[in-house]
Image (cartoon, rainbow, N blue to C red; front, side, top):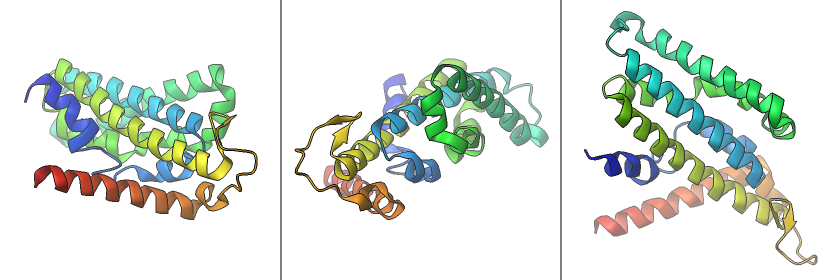
Length: 198
């Protein structure tokens, strides 16, 4: 598999949210505004890429019997760094994302990529895989959070995009709205994927 295919795999073919539907807990909970979606997407991408690098570099030294605990320790270290950096430099976003930042440690996407890709491939390919999967996650977060913010508030990044007379669809920023909109996005992706195959 060439480098471009590895990257595209994370964005389209195996998009973690829209195709594999893993790690959607935070996706549903914090995508009420675009800034939250971007913040979480960047945090997950950073942890994913960093942990892929370290796990790939140490893959020949980690015994099979302890590989999962070793992966979790590496992921936890990167998550702690992101948590502290966000607390120090983006405090409002840090408060908005709340407990979902520390929960990156147990995000299925990151552990799955450590096990399925980084532990079996070289560092450069693992970086590309981390960036591709992270970009796919970020894309899904941006699509869902921008849709929810526009429909639920009539704004994007806090700026009004719909007229003052617009009656916000409050359900869009509530949990049921997250499920419905994510389901619609997944349906659109499946439709386009099936159409492309045909």
